[in-house]
Image 1 (cartoon, rainbow, N blue to C red):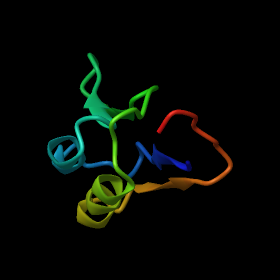
Image 2 (tube, one colour; image 1 turned 90 degrees about the vertical axis):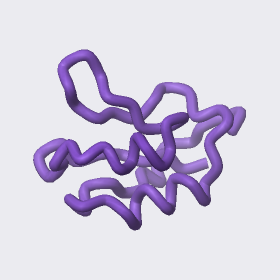
Image 3 (cartoon, helix red, strand yellow; image 1 turned 90 degrees about the horizontal axis):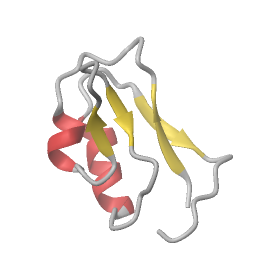
Image 4 (cartoon, rainbow, N blue to C red; image 1 turned 120 degrees about the horizontal axis):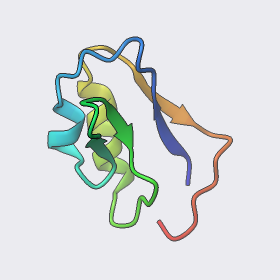
Length: 70
């Protein structure tokens, strides 16, 4: 499965992605959004909803990454 990536330079830290897909998008201890290491339990549909709802248009797919177990 392809994995989402976040362009932190464009991220407005609105937390919409975290609210829509907390299995994938987390806020780290520094207050920035990051993609979880393990995407188990995440649906591609939920990730797409987060991408489409992103205010900063900063989430995209990294299609070079293969993730096992999703």
